[in-house]
Image 1: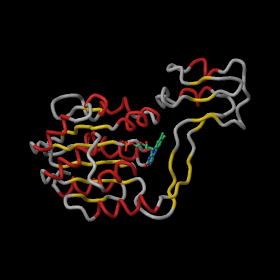
Image 2: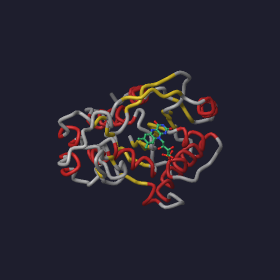
Image 3: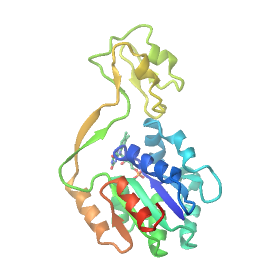
Image 4: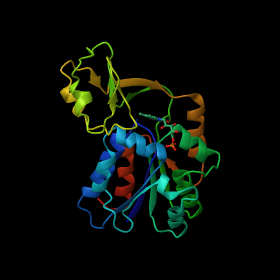
Length: 243
Ligand SMILES: Cc1cc2nc3c(=O)[nH]c(=O)nc-3n(C[C@H](O)[C@H](O)[C@H](O)COP(=O)(O)O)c2cc1C
């Protein structure tokens, strides 16, 4: 079985999505599962911030149909999305799906890698499963990337987290900041700060009405199934009698 896993630039459900695909990959199944990963530009940045980007190789080792394709490498026309017209995949999962990508799909836009994948997959009648980050009313807790708590930071002259960051992602004085586009979420800074001033933390986020409406539009689209959580994709794998 061949699955296309699309990742967009969302922190919410990102770790959970990774865990689901890691489990599917490691499960002892009768049929081999190959997972190709397609990542939006924002997805690459956010995956790095949460320390997951480098771990994706454990899921997709680079063999044929188990590659990792980034939007940047794929240019504007996303040639690898042509594999969907050739029906090379059994299912597409967009998890997590940002409100941005959901809105584009809802209005038929296909100007990015992930929206192209969804467009071509639905045209080829390949089932598409989407896990939106902002799909239901009410608040959700979302884990943030690392940042410096300015109340706890003592502005040390010898700031070990700043001096020892392997990606030079911490800059400025007396209270430094983290450049999240350099950060790879390794967590070393957090361990090194004696004042516990570096943390991810959890924030409460409320979905906008427009985003919920867009998810409803997707619910009614032929070939698309909305999943409330990444773990619900296991049902699909079970339905196919694979585990
Ligand atoms: C750390 C971080 C976390 C984010 N989490 C979310 C999220 O959970 N949901 C969302 O809709 N956008 C989130 N965004 C914003 C998207 O990355 C942004 O809208 C981007 O343009 C989406 O592009 P894409 O849909 O092509 O991936 C986040 C951005 C950052 C920096």
